[in-house]
Amino acid sequence: MEVIEEVNNAEIIQRGLEDFKNVQQHMLIAKEEKAMRTYASLKRDYLTLKALLNSLGVNLIEIDYIKE
Image (cartoon, rainbow, N blue to C red; front, side):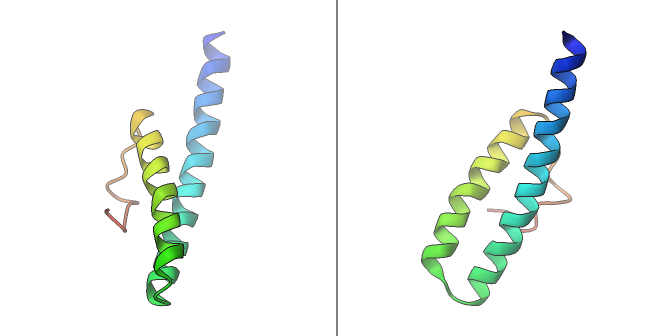
């Protein structure tokens, strides 16, 4: 049972990292285009993903270039 849980955590982390990277890229584009409502919406997703990844023990120092 523990092996299955580890695989699921690895999958969750992998998906979370991919989503985190994509949200950050879209936030930068929204900021550049001055799309403030879009940026605010993406920021909610960013903060949620950041909290999830932190709770799973992922070190975001190197990959968090928005830092909000």
